Length: 201
Image 1: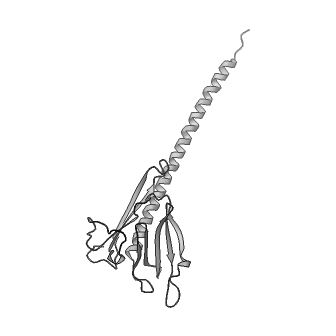
Image 2 (image 1 turned 180 degrees about the vertical axis):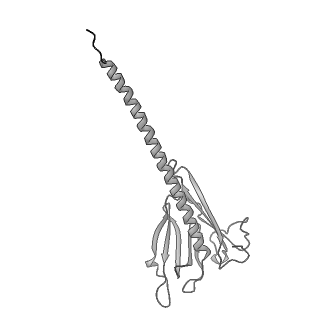
Image 3 (image 1 turned 90 degrees about the vertical axis):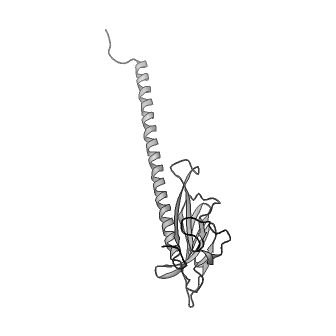
């Protein structure tokens, strides 16, 4: 009498084929999710970098004499910019600097009468991670001969009283690729309104 059904060999082969297909599907779904996550990180980081550059330049363009009469710009190095700007009705000391691949912002609010800036009370926050500038400048400074298009930046150390125009070149690692192998740069520029002479808005 003939019996219907699968032999042991047929069952093993079927299970093996099914397992291979399942592994392939899982690998494909995993790759899609990973790539989607990387693209999401890239877009979020890119958006954050643009916001940081825009906010920084907006504050710098509005730099003004401090609450205690100090010059509008205090420090202008390749990777640090300290200036005084009106934030929420108070002329704060704003300090942007790169530390260990992170762009940070320090804010010191004036206090006392006459007003002074107690640096022990500086509030420091991280504004951009994965900064890829390395030893390259974050800030470039120009004097009143710069027309906003062509010209050489001032050489370091910079005399802050000569600065009329600032360019920010913020490089950030591309999180959609391999770590620390590629980057993109967000650039923002502008004249300091209270210090400009022949530069446009």
